[in-house]
Image (tube, rainbow, N blue to C red; front, side):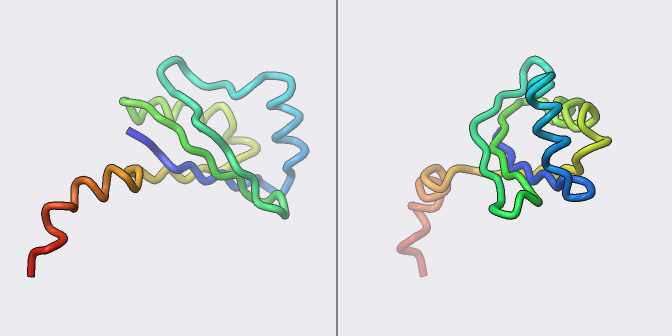
Length: 93
């Protein structure tokens, strides 16, 4: 399953987050996969796509960063897969 992850940097302190990332890496448990990230221009939030079969892995990962970041995890489906799933219904009244 894919998850859109929204990270909010506590106290808007992106430097503390990047300092830890530089020193300790992403600190993810085995089985959690990182697919990409985008940071808001003002450095308040980071948006990431993560993948795992067990959502408890997201909880473990978030616990490693709880002092610097608050997390929101949103299950998502790629647009192409959604279009394929809905295709049989497109011409229905």
